[in-house]
Length: 591
Image (cartoon, rainbow, N blue to C red; front, top):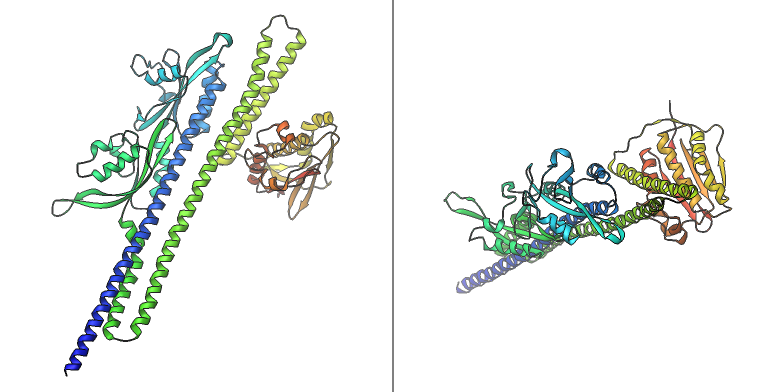
């Protein structure tokens, strides 16, 4: 009897030990799962904050660059000609609240839209000339910290000085172009979408702690966070101070909430990820704040299975059966697989965000290349026109020289016009605002008209032009003007890159219910590694002849946009040194 009692005690002690071991392992696994998921979640939030910050930097810097190009390249124009560009810039680019011109005396003389421009407003009389004076004296762009606008909300003021070069007499200060970017435009585009269908909110502050955006409390926008925080919110205050210093990272703080039933204020643990926005001399910080309960939801399914596992194991231990060990091992593996699965999903999500971040950097580089290209393409013809105009100022030049100078000016005006038209066409295509007037079009007449536009240049280079069209070629459904633009673009490229004595041919045929057009040349050809990229915006094949021929790299991108808008396809075939063929398809006209 005593032995049986001892056995029971031993069994009970063993069961209790096993139960304690299971409980300890369960608690340890619980903590490990929580730490892993919380770490991955924090990284994901930080990547989102970085992505938003980079987007804001690129968007804002692009707007400043546009105004700087206008101020630099139009500095010699009349004030009227400069301000005429305001409407085009405002309507063709998003983000501007208003664009104004302030003369050298500090008075607003023009603005667009007119209802937002305080015409006649004197900065000196209003004692608000600090930024104006700084831009004038330092001869560089000045950006003011966001301040309230007349119509509500905050706006960032961009002051760009306009100096005219007068040769030996130095530079003449003509005034300042003032562009205002409304903060709501930036936040609507880059911050509000972040927390859609999610718990938490986004906020953004400047280097002084002033709220530029708060997705949870719009009434605090424009106020200083540091002054609003209570004494018991030191954790959040430390985070705000790190943001003001331009730091990046993640942290946890306790946020005060509504009063509980007992009358005391409740607190909730928050996870915040923050990243700096460095725009010229401005320093802002974007932060994403989410309740720690979001992490709990991610691992809730794991915890449920873990609790079930623990209960079953304890029950099996109390039963004293060997199956306890087998089931313990099986459930433990199930938990590990679940944790690995959840962790893998978070890692994959982080990789996708990292790829998106890299894409933003590529877009930023593309923007810089675009600004450089446009500056070059504007500066060259403007310099030629300025030189020709200076020659015309000489009173005793002969008639032939005058005619030559006027021809140079007209050619460069046409060059600038073509550049602006290309940029506008590409903008309409990418924004989906290109209007097409479909009609029954005969390819014979369109190709004939297009050939005439390049015939003279081809004759001068000794290039033969051949047309091969079947007599019964079906008409196509197309916008005649846009289709002509595509064919002329392709023919111009063929003439440009085909050496003297070469040949250009244009053929058409019916294929699989469509009409296929082929434009071929015996030019320099395109390397295989560049063939798939020739239709990209601003892309040009890197070769000596390409650099000599010039161009913006927009022509083929515009061709692709027009053909795809016609429900057609366009592609290129080429062999370096032997020539290239550009092929596109169009739908037949059906009555």
